[in-house]
Image (cartoon, rainbow, N blue to C red; front, side, top):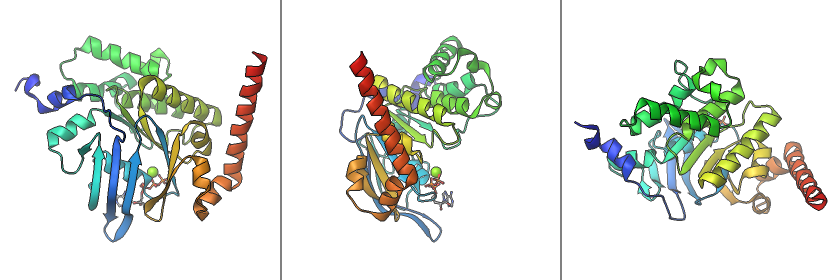
Length: 287
Ligand SMILES: Nc1ncnc2c1ncn2[C@@H]1O[C@H](COP(=O)(O)OP(=O)(O)OP(=O)(O)O)[C@@H](O)[C@H]1O
Ligand SMILES: [Mg+2]
């Protein structure tokens, strides 16, 4: 079979950019592990072009929700549509076509330790575009590494030679390899110092704006929620109990939401956001 007959390659080449309102629609999702139910009738719609923050206590099923959306976890019930295609009922070729349109940064990074950063970035490129020659692969990988804010020499380094923050950026470079329309980030700033985390947030926002991405961003980081998320979805009681801007969420009077955003850490994040805005205003005044 020539590479041009490969359905995986054909599917990757065929797509048009998604123009609908909701790149992700989850309805009635049920996920179980044995007797343990993680999600029960969970609904969620992600809007095109937004950064949706996904929050919830540890173990509430944020990563499992992401895995269900990208087809790594087959739900017991319910439907998941990505770019208008059912992930549970579409033909395998169609699912492959959709897969080539998202990038994923897994919790913990999940880089291949035996490959350099550049080779890691090339993995999805080789999978979906086997016709690209080695020189161009190197060039694309180098570009993605720079786009992710890493120095050029990181291309030839192994993950073990990088700091935690650099590894996250390398994971981001790989997630951006296929020029995705949709980016999944699972705890991208966990383990980073506050300055590194803030820089990663800024990068996420810039990439979203320049590349026109929709971002599904799982995080515990309150600063991230205040700084870059357009809306926030809250997971609790096996469902998405609320989705909206932070002021909208605060109106729901749900005890977990209240505790989360109005607890000491929530208030500190809010104050730092307000201080940042005041500084921006005074800088504008001086300019
Ligand atoms: N493959 C699996 N087999 C059995 N149970 C699982 C599996 N994956 C996840 N779980 C369970 O499902 C629940 C939700 O897990 P998940 O990883 O989605 O949590 P999370 O909200 O992402 O938590 P954290 O904030 O700690 O990352 C947990 O109780 C977890 O133990
Ligand atoms: Mg998780």
